[in-house]
Each structure stands twice: as C-alpha cells, then as structure tokens.
Length: 191
Image (tube, rainbow, N blue to C red; front, top):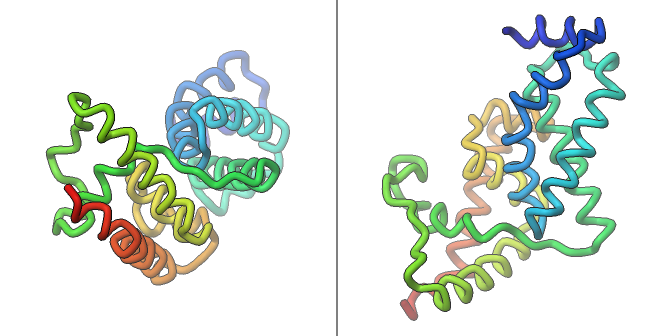
C-alpha cells in the first residue's frame, strides 16, 4: 500500500488504517527517538506521543513531503522538546559501533558491528564515555548523525526532516564525526 492509499484510509477513518500505520512506523519512530533520548522508556513514551500527534494532525499533512519524512520530523521535534523539558542530553550506547567504523569507506556500514558482551565492565565505561561525547555535540549535529547512523536515512531525507540543505546535512554529519573523534581520541588510545 502506498502512502497516499494509507492516508486516504486514515482520513476516511477506516478501522484498521491506524493500526497499519503504527505497524509500519512504530519501530522506526522508537529507534529514532532512542537515538535522541537518554532511555528506551523515554523513546517508547515519545513514540506514543508521536502517534497521537499523527492521529490529531493527519488532516494537516501537506503531501509536499513523504509520509515517513513527516513522521520523522514529528519524532525529532518531540524528542527535542522532551530533552529541553528534562534538561538532559544523553544518547544511546549502541552508537559505539558507528564511531569505530567512522573512518571506513563503506559509509559506516562495516560487517562487524557486534557489541562485545563478553566485556561488560569495559562496555559500561565505553558507553559512559560515548554518552558524554555525544552529549557535547551541538543539537543539529546529534540529530543529523543519529538519523544517518542509527536510521540509515539518506542525506536527502535528513535534509527534509531537518529542513536544511543536503550540503548542510553532509557538513553536520562530517563535523559530528570529527568532533566525536577529537573528544574520544584519548579514551580509545587506552584500549
């Protein structure tokens, strides 16, 4: 089913349309929010808010962007608002694998992204250090980096979500990577 067909069903209040929308987008919304918020519980809570917002404002969807882009934009905005309310800026620890692959030519998609479960103490310390480094990034860099590295979104869609140009997205991701490498260089020399 296309986005247009789904939107028509939603606007017509067809019984299973909203359930289908949630099934299609729930995992993506939670993953995106988890990349921007300190806890998975916060991400799940934001996901609920996102779908309530979608339900309330679907009639205002302008069709000038893809449905997924609109949903990501709502997710990012709600996550940022939660961050501001809580005055906390922490990130998920699973980004470590992307930092390690930042220099790879494959765009960060190396085949060995396994999290080293056999070293829980080292992993907890690494996660703490990574969280601090990510917290230090400016908001726009964190958002672009997360949408690209966690969600695997193309630069064009990130530009639409963030309402900036593609070169701006490329610059934000590059600067985030450079800033992370600088702030984490000393830590990773120890290992």
